[in-house]
Image 1 (cartoon, rainbow, N blue to C red):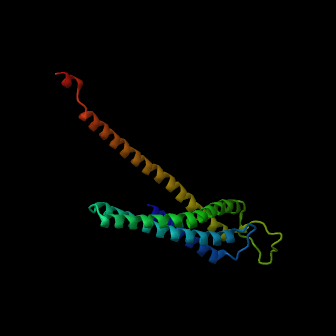
Image 2: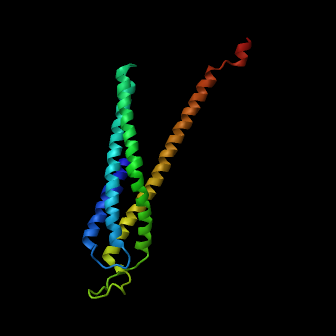
Image 3: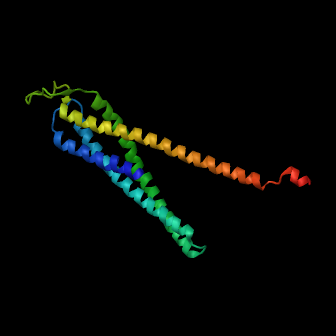
Length: 198
């Protein structure tokens, strides 16, 4: 599921934002909406591509670790386990050194963009000779494009929250079921007091 979210939020949306920037980036706007679209596209695409690569590397390392666990004890198992752990470590370094700073920047850029995009109004009556100094509002096409990106990001955030809650519900239910089975086995192993007295 993380890979799907990375594809949408890290590849599709940044390319949409870049397309909108190429289409409408030269239009007039009293807020830096075109610059927001461009920076969002570049940073999010970088984060998405690296995140997608890390997801696939992690899936490969998990498969390698599962194969290693199936091996009999010995040097071959230790070697396969060590290789999987090295992959996990390198992914951790990439996440910590590259994706985390980009993610922090993206969050603050996203918040700043919210103020810019929703802090102005669309205009369709822009004259070509209108001076920048007196300009208020934003070209309707440019502003609607940026707002489209925001609606998609809001949807992704909601989907992520609901998905997380659903996954946690499944995990907690499975943990509770496993704990119940463990308690039942524990009770079945205990000698009964009445049977012990006979």
